[in-house]
Image 1 (cartoon, rainbow, N blue to C red):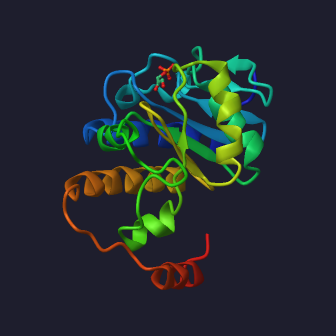
Image 2 (spheres, rainbow, N blue to C red; image 1 turned 90 degrees about the vertical axis):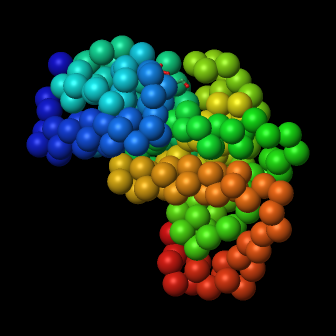
Length: 215
Ligand code: 13P
């Protein structure tokens, strides 16, 4: 049994707080979605089949860097996917995966650009997400997804799994959560604007954002 530091206790509580906030606002439902946080001695991951709205901080799974369960309930079936993200992104401290409705709707659309699914509609989308590649469909829990996601997530902190949902890495749990929520709201805007002529940000406006808000 590994020891639990104050920081780890706080992060466990924060995972449960964020999970409840997502659930209360309908951004997750049933047992969909999973959240992980990197620690100095391994990482925390929400248990499989758990409702993110009712997480018990003490029962969140703790794994070592090889993905072996050290304590807590059995981890999410997407553990290998979270691990692949940490292995590809040295600066990632948290990963959020949801089945949030608008992002999933976009992931099911015919004719989206798989290199970058959403247009740069707003400044905050550009600042928090920027580029969103589509990862081909794999069954949830398929270890092949963990391998397939590597080439995409190595280049951008957020990806969209086809017919499934977003996976977003962040420098902290709050960062990953804010970016995931921004993505979901932008997917909603994108769907609202279908069949409307839209005016996305220009390359100059995007450059200006990158200058003033470097990631
Ligand atoms: P888990 O309950 O195993 O975390 O799976 C939920 C999910 O979101 C699958 O993609």
